[in-house]
Length: 432
Image 1 (cartoon, rainbow, N blue to C red):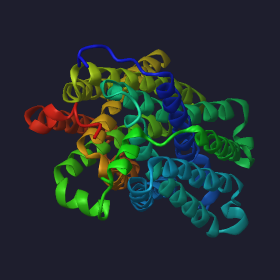
Image 2: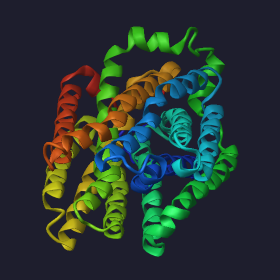
Image 3: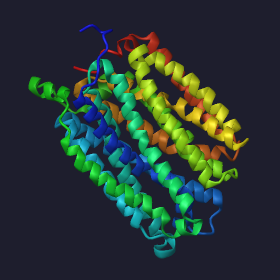
């Protein structure tokens, strides 16, 4: 086949992509809805006499615990995903996310059971983290191994947009609750609603995934008897160290950008006097632009190559996010415009899964991505809210400086890929 000839996705490819994105969106919603209600959760699940900064720090620490649980859960599911099949683990992960989310919505508060309240919330967050540790790498591998090779970039970018649609859903639900309910009602019962919704919809998504089929790549490995003959984790640690480093750096870029620009920004804006409803409305617009940015980034990968798409996208992100954190307090119009541009620029994360899927061979792909992604997410995604919160005691522009560093990381990784044989070959290794 002519590599320059356009390749279109088949109806089955679109179905696979849609079902994978739907389930992933609901899992992301379940995982991040916590942060949109961080303020009220902090008030309800910790002693009332704590200083406000310490209450916020401890609340974000519970949020971070979900990231710290990712590596173990993701590694276990990835191991079996490489050994017994992608689909089985892909379906299991969403069940393991939905159940703890339902429980979180029903938890009693500190006023009712004391210190047991934050401990139970912590436990549920860790169970959520273990589930999503297998979901995201599994979704990328599942979709990349289904679609035509020439459209893997677009598929990965679109799937990432679908996953982050869960953030948009969380933002919309949080906006609706903040708009329609009074602060007293939110504290009394309103904060529980999004957790119940997420758990129920997660169970529905699990049912829908039963219509998915095992990936052609995994079926071929079974037929050829070319599945990993030893522990996949041993193979990636001994033979794919550079791929691990590249994947971890890119995961830092992906995780921390979304955490700071999309998840933390509404809370940070509220601390500077912007109302909860206005900050969440702006956040919804920024998240819509993030979805568009992910799709554009995926298209750019297929058109120009992943290293170049990453380079241009990282520079754009550095410029747009710097402007946002410097200008959002100027006026409502400036807030919406600058946040929208910042959200679109963060869409560069749509490049990340393509590079990660391409850099590991099929026999250990799930494990390689899961190990790198979840370990990095546990370190950088989990600690970023705490680190930025502490830096805010020094400078109000801590988020801007942090994202600027991430943009520099993206530029350096793209330069490495452009200069290396690995970077030039990264377009041709998604399939066996």
